[in-house]
Image (cartoon, rainbow, N blue to C red):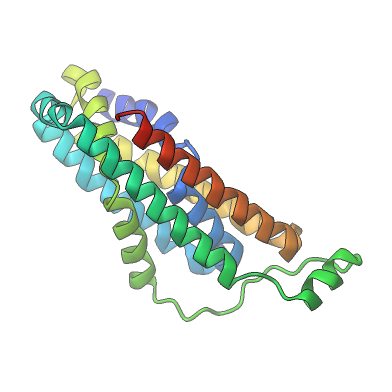
Length: 212
């Protein structure tokens, strides 16, 4: 039980950091709502389960191995963030509201939650988010650091705590997106997406420059 609490409490602040995955979960909430977007947090939690298990098994040895390749991992992580920022930008441009929709919402028409049927299969949505989460090597680095700090509390309970925190945080992001989709206009949602792209790109550049 102690390991579960340690895993949950130490990973929770890390998982609450707003990054590209969090923004994508919020976006799924905006477009699909909780009813259709629920597989996304499950896909992310699956990767967190995998990386947490690897970190719990390898522990200090993994951290030392990753530390010897710190620069390469930092560059790879920064490039990954830039790729995810480009992905977000393409999605933002593809969902840009029409002039008619913008004019109607700006004139005071109540915003409509864009929760139309998208045809996404639950397994496909979960796999998509699992893949997006897995390609970032910085996730494994962070979990390796948490595993070392956990010390004697490392074990299956610690990994379960991380998974519980992941489901709670990303489920919360999904609910947030669903709520925002019901109250924000399409124009405001589009501007928010563009700001998110800039933020992720800036984070990617910062990550790369920090190790060069």
